[in-house]
Figure (cartoon, rainbow, N blue to C red):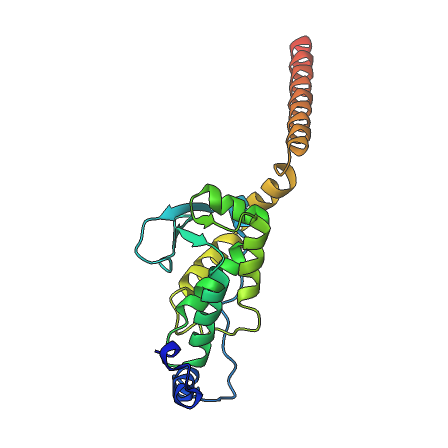
Length: 220
C-alpha cells in the first residue's frame, strides 16, 4: 500500500507515522529491568553433563530443560535472520503490551552460542541449520543481538530454564565433572597423560600390596 502511494509523499507520510508510532510510550520508572542472567555455553554445559536434543515442536521458542537434557527446536539461520530478530527485539522493547519472548530466546542463544565450537555442537545435534556457511558468523550473530537490551524476566517464558540450568551447573558433583572434562579430557594428549598416571598409580599400589603380603608370609 505504501508503494502504491509513493508518487505522493504527502499521502505516504501518514503510513510512516502509523509504522513508527504503533504503540504507546512505555512508562518510565526508577526500577531497573531485571535480567535473565547468564548460563555457560553449549560446550561447557556438555562438560557439566548437559545433553542437547532437537525438539519436535511448532515454535522455535518451545525450549525445555529436564533431567540434564536441554531440548531446543530446530532453527535455521540465514541472511535474513539478523534483520528479523533485530526488528522483533526492537518491537518488544518499544511496545510494552508485548511479552519479550523473542528477546528471551535471543538471550538464551547468546549464552549457549559463544564460539564456533558451540555452533558446531548444536549443528551436530540438528538444532541449528546454518545457511551462512561459517560457524563464526553464526556465533557472532547471536552474540550481538542482545547488547544493551534489558529483559523483564517476569514477562517471558524462559526464567525457569536459566534457573534450572544454573542450579545444575552449581552442584559440586557437576562442577568437578566439568573441570575434569575440561582439564583432562579436552584433548588426546591430556587423556594419554591421565591414563599413564592412573596406570603408574595402579602399578605402585599393586607393588605395595605384594610387598606387604610377602612380608606377612615370611613372618608367619
